[in-house]
Length: 404
Length: 64
Ligand code: HEM
Ligand code: SF4
Image (tube, rainbow over all chains, first blue to last red; front, side, top):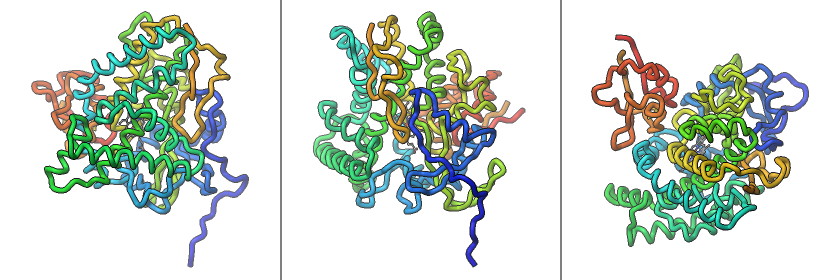
């Protein structure tokens, strides 16, 4: 006998994700669905229903639970974003695989993203931030803070780290944007194929003529251990290049915007530049540029008075976990003096962001230097004319016209 | 205070180092290690927050 699942009927669960109205606030509807419950139900793009996890404590417990899967290659893995469909069976390293494969890949990479290594590259980030601001100031207002500053900082930094020639940046910045922000899977497939082809050749070139980036280290290590798994190195490069491009840019641009919209908070920073690390943590909590994460349930789990069944789709709302009143007092207030500790802006559990210490260094140096050098920075258009990214994408402005 | 670290679980996030930098560090593999001479937590109250900060429960604290 087959079991029929009985759920309370009524109106269908609301569609997820929705677009933000204000660039740094999650859609009001999300908070309404949540009510007082740590879990609610939503409908995904393909009509499938999913759990939406919004409670901070419940979400953290779930993200640490090995009964959840991040296996993007599983035929039943939930589709929230139009992802590429035609990857020729290639798995997405790290973010799209479960342990033990995940642990093996992560172990290979963490030395390159550790605290000491990231502290050591701070001077490199500072000098490229200085250079970009010199150029922006020399050209004069009005400037688009995204293309003049927020994008090239992380783009140059990740290229330098990986050993990818920054000269090709127009090519991969555009493909990376299309891959993540694509409206259709055909667009995402085309961007993926172009990036893959580019990196495949780059890895071959490096094998013949090694440089001193992270990719060169990976190639050397694999060759030492035996054969080079060309596909694995290329896919790791692809994930790191895309992750490096599509995240910090938003944190820098949306961070600048949020500070500009909260002048009394910005003032605290201007008077006490050492406050920057606390500012960045509060920005990560408050803006939640990665708005959600997706998982599939592998075995039944009891949580928050509900039973998640094997095979269920799960969306973990970073923005609502970060604004759970049980975890943060007055959570919808941007307050750089609060402790934003335990925010999940970088996720939680085994997949917590590999690049978080790089991202922190980039955002701290970028925003700290931007406001120190241009304390009179202001928006050149009203807030509601700032174009922002769609709800399924990483959150942030598409363009940010500023003047001074 | 007794601090137990589980380097097999550690994913190198650096949360422990950020939370209590005088007590936690990362070795050359960027895995968690205790700062020599401060294995008992050196009375730093921030250490108490580290087990919650670690994303993979690699750190335990007990009295004694
Ligand atoms: C402010 C900037 C950033 C934010 C908000 C962010 C956010 C996140 C989040 C939420 C996850 C967890 C995804 C999940 O559990 O499904 C993650 C994972 C990851 N991030 Fe970031 N990220 C940022 C910057 C970066 C940078 C600069 C890199 C550069 C390499 C990077 C590389 C990665 C990788 C490789 C993973 C997968 C880790 C794993 O599965 O073990 N991120 N990030
Ligand atoms: S917080 Fe946990 S995972 Fe992160 S470095 Fe420390 S022990 Fe490792």
